[in-house]
Length: 75
Image (cartoon, rainbow, N blue to C red; front, side):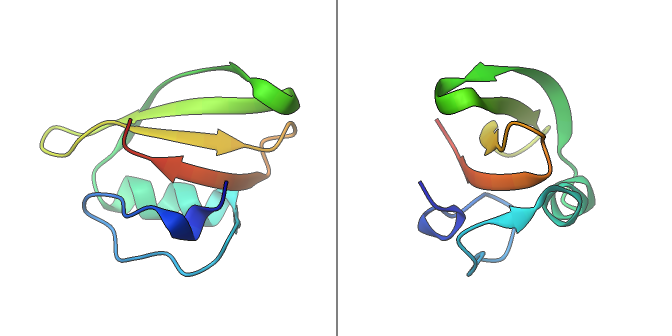
């Protein structure tokens, strides 16, 4: 799982494999996404769902301390 493997609607391609959560979240907020929920994920990680009024929903996988985004994709 790497962040650079997926294209997210409304964002420029991300070239890094992971990203600090605050940087990723600012990109998402700037594109008009909002957080709608979160839950535990495999491997002691956290899954966060992002919604947008025009774009497809995004699922993002964060590190256990929620400081790093490991991947994000449209399900």
